[in-house]
Length: 130
Image (cartoon, rainbow, N blue to C red; front, side, top):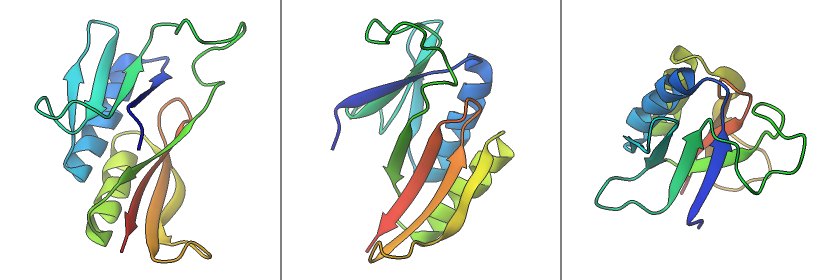
């Protein structure tokens, strides 16, 4: 389990629409974090772990980094197969691009997942394991 991670985006409003839709599908929440960022996580009562999403250039980036070039992958826990399906539907409707339709993944055991690319090309996944 992670404490936090972050992703820099080129268009905060587009990212917020996408992550608000994904949060709703997974029973999670987003919260403002200044005028150039927001947080994606469980709730205000349970703030960690979280994904920081913003337009600021992080101090840990290497020279030449920019939004859309340092793509990352993150998988969020889903509570059911239906939640994975809803995540995929909501993400596509909010401007995401399909990167793997909902379904079992060969060689992954009891696993059902879906992949979408957020507006900056980051590979975002919902995964249900039983």
